[in-house]
Length: 156
Length: 156
Image (cartoon, rainbow over all chains, first blue to last red):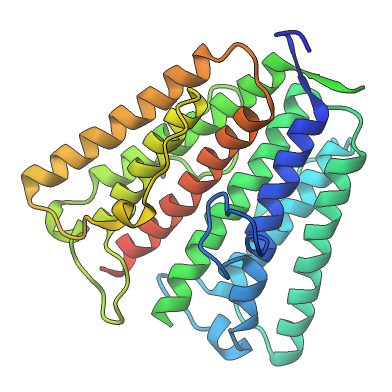
């Protein structure tokens, strides 16, 4: 490896490891990169009811935060795959409240978006500067909203 | 393609790291934060009394989040420089409340830690697996705590 290039595998593995920790928590028996045990997105959301995630705190709800984070992941995967059409980001904030049924459905779509992002990283062959930036941005953005969700969960 | 152009990786990483602290990102506008919501712009709006306020329910103070973030930055900065000292992570949560003088000092230390990591990023010639994962961990961890602080700021 020369100093002008990095190994693609190193980059993809780091992305996948950190996104995995963000959603699923740190793997048992291994060190965590940045989260305490048991505080990934899924474990956090599983403890919350539809009523709790629909409760407004600081002008937002947990349902809104997770829908926005999911929307961002989905759109950036599309951009990495070559999307050129602009995104109306206001559409990422359309959900504020959810029924029990909607909450179950939303958690299911969050899991699919996460899995789709991992597949997107693994299969993408075009790692241009834009695509590298978007992939790292997906990680930072998701961690950012997990940080918000965990504070909101303490406040509701 | 088994490699990625190193400059495509570093430009993206550096820009997102800068955005997290300085609210600006020359490469992309902003990639994942709203304007003026980076670490430094956020802390400028908080005084020592607010930074020390503990919410009912035993949540963590903003000062504690800042010190923990600084501790992580310093630790990972050493790691990136191949100084693999162990850390007692409990030490990263020792600060809970601050006087005005201590708050000024802590914010200064956070600026310094950010600058040190930025300098280290620039100095790295070969981005191997642990440097890539360490650098992306720094970004992810910082984004998580920035968001926590911004939520706390709205509640206190």
